[in-house]
Amino acid sequence: MEICSVVMAAGNSTRMKSKHSKVVFRVGGKPIIKWVADALYEIGCSEQAYIVGDRQEEIREILGEDVIYAFQEQRLGTGHAVMQAQTFLEGRDGYTIVLPGDSPMVSADTLRRALETIDSNGYACVIITALADDPTGYGRIVRDEEGHVQCIVEHKDATEEQRQIKEINSSMYVFKTPLLLSSLGRLGASNAQKEYYLTDTIGILIGDGYKIGAVICDFDDTRGVNDCIQLSEAQKIMNQRIIRKHMLNGVQIMDPDTTWIHYAVEIGPDTVILPGTTLMGDTRIGSDCMIGDYTRLDCVKVGDGTTIDNTIATQCTIGQDCRIGPFTHIRPDTVIGDHVTLGAYVEVKNSTVDEYTRARHLTYIGDSQVGKNVNFGCGTVTCNFDGQDKKGCIIEDNVFIGGNSNILSSVVLGKDSYIAAGSTITEDVPALGLGIGRSKQVNKDEWVAKKSRMRGSNYIRLDDKRRVEV
Picture 1 (tube, rainbow, N blue to C red):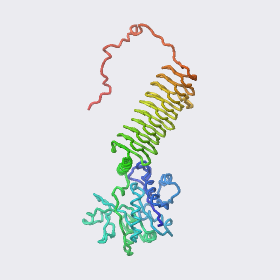
Picture 2: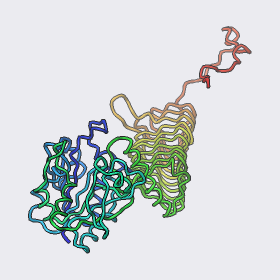
Picture 3: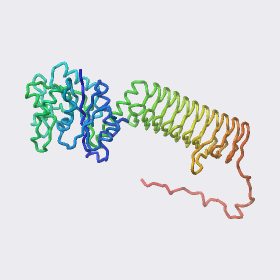
Picture 4: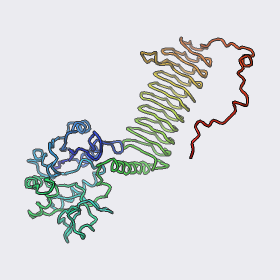
């Protein structure tokens, strides 16, 4: 069965109030136009033509040059849009699928059913339809006694009886290619808008004696995106579909209404996703993990058995049986080994941290190599920026760093060494050595009394500076 497709994507996206084409907005982490293209590829339709307009560069960047592009200089209706693909369609046999480019919910199963229906019944065209609870504004599908499509009536032109029809036109079609070309050549623009409507091809084909069929799909599959409200609705529906897939695969998602997961994310069984979690990009999470509350992972690889709480992590790797968070920030190009603990207000950037290392609170590790079983005391900072270049330090296995220490750029802390609390380390510390980098303490007796700096009951009071009236 020879299949090709024409996708209409030339609109100016006026109602989106955006400088971008509406078909490049993302639903479930994937551009709308890519959802359409992937559904076509899934049914074996690799011959795809896209009708594009002034913002075609954005679409080309997403789809690449393996598809055909036809530029629609004037926007003269859906029929006129498909006319721009006539050169692409000429000489072809088989079937042409015509789709709007702003319908991310269209499924391969729906397209497959439409193809099977047209092929087995000899229809000239099959319209993909849906049953709408409120069909106001949609074109109605009028059928004859045998169930064949008699016509499509627009809402404004429908009689009161026709307006009671729930079956609506989705603007998705499968045509026999030669008959599509024949009917396009006879379209007129004798209407108030002076536009060529693709729906008029249905009447032309019926007038030629051909039969038109229809396949009913789920209404959600037909949803288009014309403004930010419809974009939000599509995102919610797609997100619930993605979440349902993961739950059927053994993932426990505690609150689907506050969890957002992109289409490419993979999660192992027996992992628990807590409320407020967002999983983006090609994130891969192992089994028996606990993620959340309120965690965002973007392109992160997470090993089995790891717990990540209230954390933001981007483009990094986290090993098995780690304990991350709360309020941890792991930045790109970081590799965290197995059994690592990163606690409250710890930030790691472009570094490797080997297994069993612990930084439980208030630590910054940047551009550094950290070995196994290293202990970071509270308030430790790797000073990785000298004002011009960024270069971290090397901390070898089993190093103990006391609290409130600064490790300067390029310093090497040797294996099994210790750093005294409150030190600023400017030179290498040898293996098994103790590094101390602090000034001598000086105490001044009776200084408080002499300077009248006593803090008594006058300083014990409520802090009302952040009080909020409700």
